[in-house]
Amino acid sequence: MNRVQPAAPVRDMRTGRLHTRVYRSGDHHLWRREVLRDGVPARSLPSLPTDTGLAPAELAKDGAYEYRVAGGLSLGHLLWPPTADAAHGAPLSPAMTNTGRALRSLHAQGPVLAGPAPVPPPVTRLARWLRSADDHAHHRLTAVLGPARLRELSAWCDVLVTPASAPPHTLLHGEPSVGLIIPCPAPTHAVLLTGETLSHGPAAFDTGWLIGELAEMARLSGPAHAPLFATLATALLAGYGPLTSDDIAPLRLAAGLRSVVHVADYATYVGWADGLEHCIALLPDLVDTSGQAALDAVAVSASTAAPGAQPT
Figure: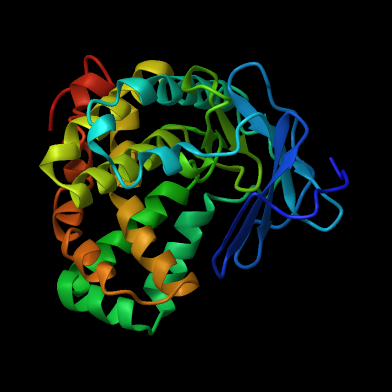
């Protein structure tokens, strides 16, 4: 996909880790995502099904990942900050349903990456940050959570990346986000940009990661907007289909870790901001409930995610 790019991007977003530029290209948009730090080593990308809502990356000669899709705005742009007009979530639900189907199709590929296959990049980043960071955010996290909870978070990272963990590992998106879901042009035709974070792990990781992002938005925006994010979480699971009882533990852990990674990544690649104090204050119950508090924030229970699973 090494095409000549237009003179200037219509959207330009950058942190210390990632530079994303969106170019208008005829009737479509070219999304270029250049990983600046702490990315998965560039490798040949496997063939992925394109008729199920996945938008596979092509690796450019300069190492950037490129996606050619119809839309130029992500679902994240439409969701945040939430507005009264979107409070019920109905116009955006099809995008999440389509994303659930796309993830199911991706996971059906099995563990296809040549070894040693990478683990989900955000888990790797968080494990390293918890172990070695010495910034203000880490000091505040330690003060609020305490050493025992920090050890628990490190243990979660180990569970999610250990090959012996159940259920069996498969191909993962690795870091799905509303910022990578692109309505094209309507939510019913949304696609999920997929490529630079492909990895192996328990299939429920991807679903839990997205639910954790929705849960964080719900918890930060307050009760008035909680129904919006609960509707979207329900739509995601409806598209993905039922999970098994073995999926519930990694689903919870991934959902709980998502908010912690947000704090760590923001502090590392953007810098400390006073708003992180509020984010950190919301973390203790995520650890104390093994991530269930994230599911609760968007009205997801074990019985709705995996019919037949026993509540715990």
